[in-house]
Image 1 (cartoon, helix red, strand yellow):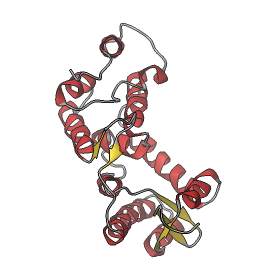
Image 2 (cartoon, one colour):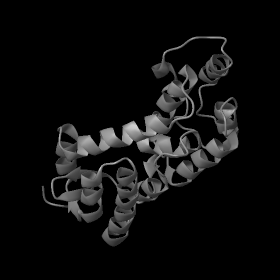
Image 3 (tube, rainbow, N blue to C red):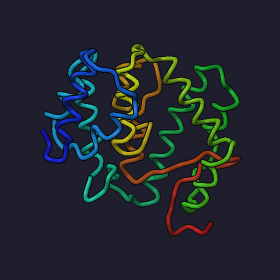
Length: 216
């Protein structure tokens, strides 16, 4: 096991997955914080379907970032603006595909046509905190994942919580658990975007991509 892993929490996880204990989802939020190797991942995913695929995808995420002294995994970026814009476009193309399949032609058209625009962190934070296009898109992504999930259990909910706290990012967690929602969104383009330091928000007329030096 990794030196930074809480052995007692891992023992609780094993008992919980075996049905020998009951815990709230949040109890396992720190389960994967600091993980670096496959042994811990083997133990975490052992009782889940497609455990080998889950492990391989978790290793993909770990390879895309670094821990350093951070509580959450950090992306390997930053990338040059052109590479980041290309990665953002591929992510938007996948979301547009899903929107079309879900019967949302207006959202599909928006995602296909919207330009990728650099913006300050403050602009993105404002977009995320409101009830505009960014929130609508996020809700649509969440609905699609929930619809496609093939496993619904307390253990699945707790795993979602642990994976979210790996990098404080829902979509990376859903990249890892994609084998459990095979008809859902392909989160591989999102992982490629995140690896480059990508953080984005849909607003009226643009998909904002964080550029720390950009003017607000």
